[in-house]
Amino acid sequence: MSDTVSDRDLLDLLLAVGADRGISAADFDRTFEELDLDSLARAEFAAKLHTHSGVDTEERTTPDATPNQIRWIVADEQPARTGR
Image (tube, rainbow, N blue to C red):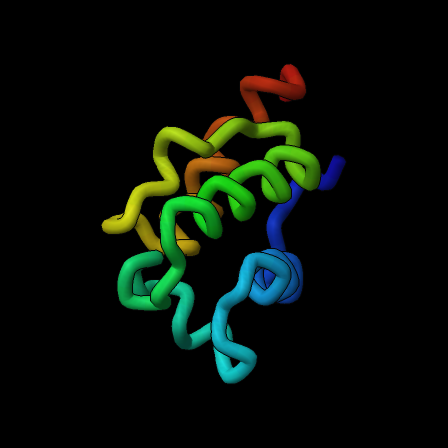
């Protein structure tokens, strides 16, 4: 498990769940709905992120959330999870 979610990590996760191949870091503040990622893609994104980070974000990975918001949730929750 990684302590951080880098731009590259986020990009790889989004591409793995079907985001448009033209996606870039500039799109990380667009909502999952704007990125045209349906509920199945969001659930898969959350599962892959959980594997990567150890933080469960599935219920917070909503159509109105953005990838950056989810990344910040992971960053906020990791210190508590790891005891730092």
